[in-house]
Length: 391
Image 1 (cartoon, rainbow, N blue to C red):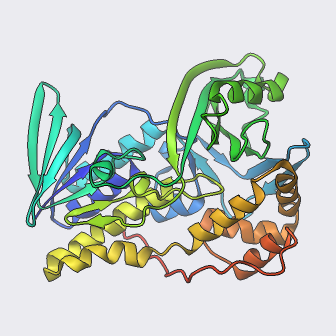
Image 2 (cartoon, helix red, strand yellow; image 1 turned 90 degrees about the vertical axis):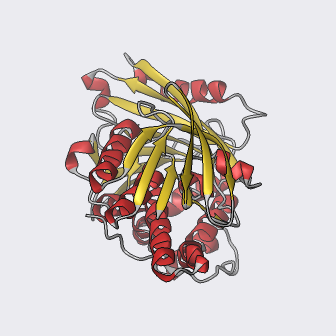
């Protein structure tokens, strides 16, 4: 069996690693091997532990989260059972691709711009250094991002897309000291009319950014300038080293498998609402898609390719989307959310959800009762995701 994985980010590299390690002839195709995707670079503890990410790729270990309300009041949440690691996407992507190569995947710089599939094969047309090529494969894993060329040609379009803009700002040592020990989230319509702003500390710089649905009505550069203005003296002496933008899909597509093609990561829309975190879901979806391919190889049953989506379930996505819809709609609701996050009991269950993907019925009840609702909305059951076998 021969599988082509289109896209060398976390989801594609995860799929390629699992496939190659199982003896599948695997091609990992990445458009820009030296590229850097716009990404805050936060790695929840579950991501680090389950995927055995080494300490050398981490730039900071953050043990606090500070949430800011529109009024300026804030809540400081301590991570008592772990930390959030921060990294750059170029560092993370290079490590994951190298791990896939060491497992036996063939890494190529190639931009796949079209394809055709038959009942038995998929034919990819790719631009490569020096010209074009056609790659024939039994199956394709589409890990080519939020604006997936493959998903688009299959007729799939993202249902909800955020626009993001962020800067990497290098600060003098005394400036970095004010950011070094925590991630910061800003729930303020002056920064984002319908989502949030963030700050993640790295080794000698911070990543400062925002996301919004309303980029057509609000200028992203103007919102970012206002964000920086609100931070005032905290950015004194800062030098912008890089400005970057990217789309962020917030609703999973209805189908992730079509014929001999499986969508993973951002291409499938697997970014968490409320937080915008997507690296864990990218790694997990790549691994689970690979497991479905192996089940198909061993059984000969094409229906086994759908195991990946059937096993995933979307209960946590539905919950976080409902919380986002309720609490991000205006400043009064955001103020209430930050106030709720100041309650120790709620902090504990919220951290279990956001950092460890553990869904708690008390959390569901507390979040919705905080808005004065008589009962929580119905959430479909969530299967237990299989633990990673990566090592």
